[in-house]
Image 1 (cartoon, rainbow, N blue to C red):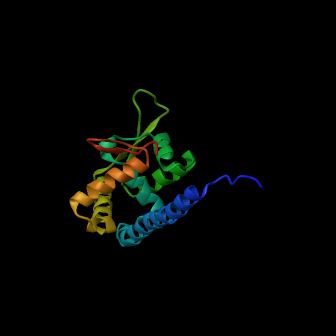
Image 2: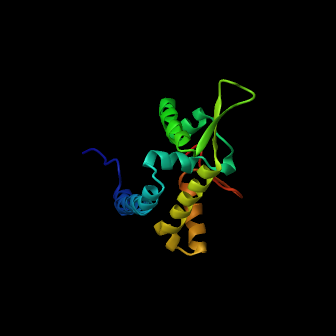
Image 3: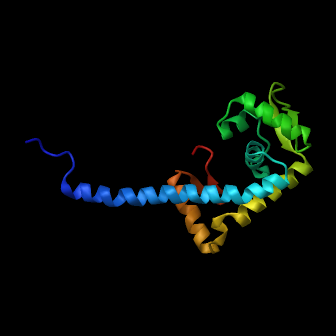
Length: 165
């Protein structure tokens, strides 16, 4: 008779971990879904589609103005998609495209004052309407550390570097 690949102790460990992992993934999606639904009202008020809101979210002034290619990489989309999104945001006066002085073929995306205000409204809605907002600051910090660790992010003073996650 062949020897089982998993001994009985490993099997029990696997059976007890699997439901926990399943629950954690389920809860992660549930938090994201609930946050998206609650922020949906704000997106409607701001006349943003999910794609435009996602682009604004990733145009974080603390990270500087990205090139169109960098934003495409952040959003994991084709550069032509960023051209379409940038056109919509520019038409609405939320951003401008600026030619990079060091490489004239590169265009950076710079939020206008109206774009920065729209982004602040979006970020505020995410921060106040997410189920995570119901956690106290200590719990939020713990969750932050755990999520950053799960993503393999380098958590520094400015928050997690999740650019590679």
